[in-house]
Image (cartoon, rainbow, N blue to C red; front, top):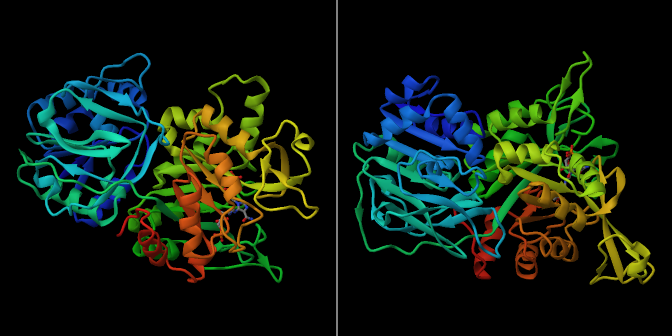
Length: 527
Ligand code: 1PR
């Protein structure tokens, strides 16, 4: 019997689904006594160190957790659930104490690479441990974090991972084990690791000559644009430059749950759902997006991002729902990240008027509660040609690699809201920078000019944005062939590339994209 500690932040549903898939019986912690009576305890932590410790204190879980751990009873901590074992974290401005089971602290990444460290990375194994039984040496796991542990006791290091430099990514001491990566989001290898924990009689480990694991891979993301069709059914659709209608009807490219399961099986590193009519249909009222997520997360064990309609809303009964209500419904239903489109543009424009953070915007609130890795900004820009940079004063102007209809050599990328219907007076680079300052953890960079065209990613746009932010950028819109993926990874700093049409229409399978990237020596995860 596994006991799961859910302190109310982030995506515990994925851990439950993973444990159910491997046939584990489980119960949830609802009182401090449940911790002390646990046979085996899993602590999945997501979000922010300080808010996690605050909640653990309020629920009076700290003392029973310490007692459980000091008695060397079976424990598996995930992500923040590992960081909690240490003395404190630099993420907490007040230096709030952690559980203090291990000596050492939690430090921010100091690197020029994008932070959060987000994606599939390998592990160098330092100890032989039943938890890692059967895990191949070149296996990759899903990481998403901005801080890493710095243990003082070297003999607890179970594994390290390289992201610019080597950091400790798993620990083991007696029956206490913990990983920085998310096994519940790491496909088959992650399920095996969880199964090892569930089945092992003892988790004791012994030192070995460290193995050399794989490095970080580029991510391939399948995107499902979802909306109700004219019959009221939720379908996956796909536009050409955001126009999803063909002969007057909404294009129907399949059922969301079926397509997502197919992409998981085919090796997608992440799956994104965009509720493209969220700006007019409120997700908590009109569209069963939360139900959809619940179904998908039962079958799909890679990260899920969901976007569309994250904003406050007053329903027909006069009840006002906050953007955080939508976000918490999405997380409870199985999302790992949420993406904000239209509202992010409004928030950034408001912020830029004063340059002062209020702490009240949805971006700030989500990143404070769930961590900045959980906040993706979906940008929907359109190219605007200008004959000289002065013509677009105040905007980030690019010298384009193409020429405009009137031989223009310069352009800027104008952000839009409401699915491209309304152009706003802010460019994509400025928007991305402002959202990063407010606490966003990733940029999903679409391009209306390229969407659905199969002409390749807009490299000018992607370079401009990726060169001006420190957070990861997902290149999106226009993929037509495997070569477009190698091009975007070679020519820009994009960490991930997303496609929709070619995957839905089975023109280019995910496996062919990965094979091509691997042939070009661009690291990819092989599932
Ligand atoms: O504004 O917070 O409610 O979020 C709405 C979300 O829906 C935004 O993320 C916005 O990008 C998206 N959206 C709105 N309208 C459309 C539309 O197509 N009419 N889809 C839309 C955006 C773009 C990509 C697409 C890539 C790859 N879809 O995500 O999947 O361009 O396509 P391709 O590989 O076929 O070229 P809010």
